[in-house]
Image 1: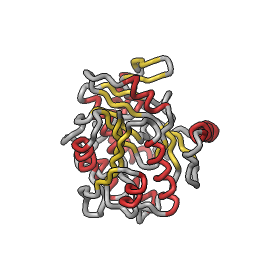
Image 2: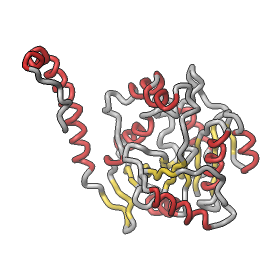
Image 3: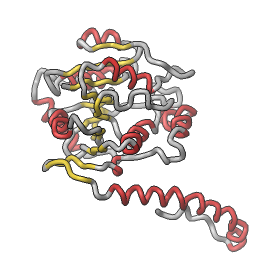
Image 4: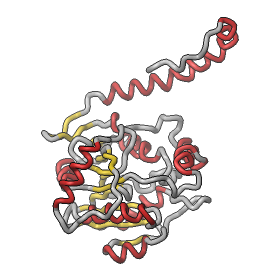
Length: 300
């Protein structure tokens, strides 16, 4: 029915707990699930043997040892046993609503990308998968915590095998920007971009950024992050779930009529911001003499 693929961080400490939780949750979404885990991170081979998961250790990396997204995507689409594949970050829990959503959107003749927002929760211990109530309790925790991330945070991507093969630029994973590019590519290819946030409870288990030498700042602002940002072509290849062509809701799949407005707003911002800052530069001497100060760029 479905092939999951992902790449983990080293299976150590709290990260070990939440990654095992994630992998085991994917195994329970459907009887016919395949999981491909990429990379030679510490503990990955052992966990794959323990859980019966296919391990693919060889992944192309950059000079810092960070994995290239294209290497993972190209291999996954070659190795996957199923036609429908899902790339998901290795800290995301899926519940029973996930496969139901896929069944509602999958059409053999139409290219599509299904993605969605996540719910952030704190989980410190292994989940009791032997007890079916873990799903109900996890969903209740997410709703009680009530922290759903905004539309530019995307942690899972469902599509047909081959859609992204040999198409992805030199993004590295674990740094920003590549997820937004994946959405742009789907739209630019004429595929349906489906936001399933309303019906899929994708639960993210919170963690720190100790895996990066510079912590959170290094992940979001470091040299590798800047190289990823450059591949977005000045935001021209940046999209969020607000740009989705369709919304999957409890009563069915509906067209997102706000998407053209969102894109027009982005284009206006990209056009006006440079002009605004040029104007500020030109008028700075006069404004300083008059005692005025910059108030920021105009809203688009």
